[in-house]
Length: 111
Image (cartoon, rainbow, N blue to C red; front, side):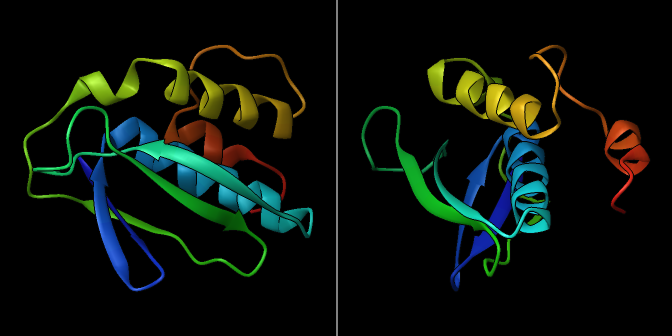
């Protein structure tokens, strides 16, 4: 699990979703734009399928670090995760495919 720090608060999500949020935010910032995204999160007592809505990209700092909670791969499944994967692929100028790895992220020309 990853903990996303944003606007003075933190939320826990899956490792993949946490990485996608950081990558999307970096690519948007490179293009001098920001977008609103919806992220599946784990939040005790929040009912079924809680989400966080956040603006990422230019002017919005996002930090993803390990979270103390148990892994929850169910957050990687579903429409929200697919939407994030698709948006990342669009920003990278390619069709959706396998989720990029850290190695792929480090190979991008803007780093």
